[in-house]
Image (cartoon, rainbow, N blue to C red; front, side, top):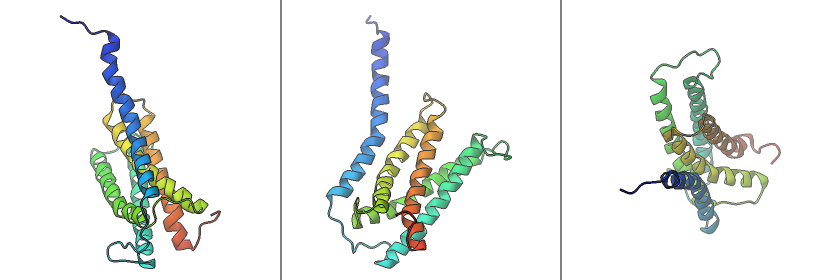
Length: 189
């Protein structure tokens, strides 16, 4: 009979935790490297739209994504009894939260695909740099949130931190693209 020491039992769990922590970073870096190394195609369209039409479409889709993120935030607060005056959330809130999260993720994909293939990751101005970085971080944070949701061993603050970071990334993307487009330019950029 071979006995396992406590250190031997912890090693696989430690490796799993380290790999889980590195996966969101790897996704973020991977998106950034792809965006920096491929040749942008400024003529790339989206759903048949080109030029200003594609920018208008992405801005509208970005507003829809921001609205879904706000709904996600409110549902998350409600599920964890942090929404003032709302009381306990009914059982339907959790599957609704998951469904809206899936819809938000799916909605983000064509926007991100067009952005990264048409423009890449650039740092030509403050606005573009913030937008590029937030776009890369978005998918790393999404992976982190999925991993945190699946883990039951992390501290209680991990899920709100991951969810908050995800909403923040979406808000930065919305501010530096959709709002900037509809306003003509964003203040401070």
